[in-house]
Length: 484
View 1 (spheres, rainbow, N blue to C red):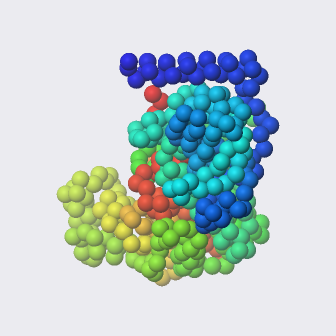
View 2: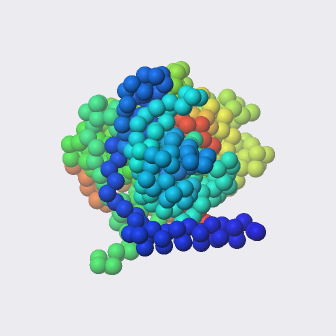
View 3: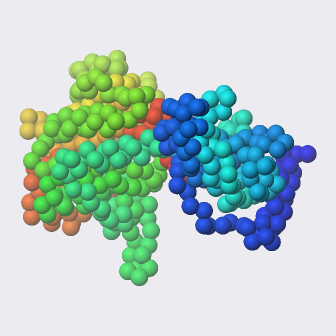
């Protein structure tokens, strides 16, 4: 029998069992009251001996999915799983009135049970069952219990099965939730205010990225899914929110890779009356605090973060010398040898950035703040007082991945208007990621944006880093995939 035929046969058998349950008015009940979780029971009681538990006679009420079964005539051992973990059930025919029904339960069925905690002769904490009920009939079989769900694409397409059968996958998403909670707590403790800004923008802005376009029928106007919340958050700083943050979903119409998904999550925050140097120290302190309360195997960021200018990073990690970084011809020759595509009219700043991305980023393994980005590729950042060609900007790289981007915010409305015009010129020349001119944002700046600095942090990539996963799809519950 082929695998598909065998599965169809199992599904048909389970449908027959469901029909019997319907006839007996026992299908999908909703009146079982769970009082305990498997993980909490183990945490509280696993420390006690077999004899101590016999004296306690601790009664529990649990519910979960059947993951393992071992039938032994008139008694059986069954393992159920809830969100907190697994626990074993011991069921006897002479103690459970519906034992014949219980024998027909299948792997994947969800049951509710009441009983007393005990330990088996091998020392496994278990529930001596007094009552058991079928709460949900599973019509489709789980993946083969010994192999789990090993097909990578199937794990992404059917994440619910991945979570049920691969404990390490469930652990990643539990840790992700802790990371976000710790991040939020850190900022709130630092007196930041959390806000929500629009996800549909009349003008895309806040990042150099190609947006998704949608249409509002009632207003008869195109809208753009948010590529970044930056310009709205800075409007709030104008309005008096001196410490503000948003944990937000962004959408960028770009390719898929192990580091890129068109829909992703970022933290973005702004602080008035500080600069980019302050924010670098703040980010380092935040990252170290975020992981402080995680399980020991996730404790990273023990060393001080490094700081390196973009020029120094290029010199350190390529054959280029300091004088070469001022020579357009030399840089283009280097790009040719390294198969880095650059436009023949590209400026030195653009070429250096291309070299940095192609030859340096993946070598930045230790936490490293890269500073002194060219102002030309930083249209929303304030220029350095000592060198107007350089932005007061940093990006944080760890394990070869960009994790954060921050800068002292440009608050000169006339300078910002000029840079927006430069971006529009690039867009007119074919750059689909260049920014639009946002007249309303310029008007907000004209009311006065206090000196401030902002940071954007990729939560997906940070989770990858902390959990040691290799693909962004492993930290997104439902990553974007091509239709079958």
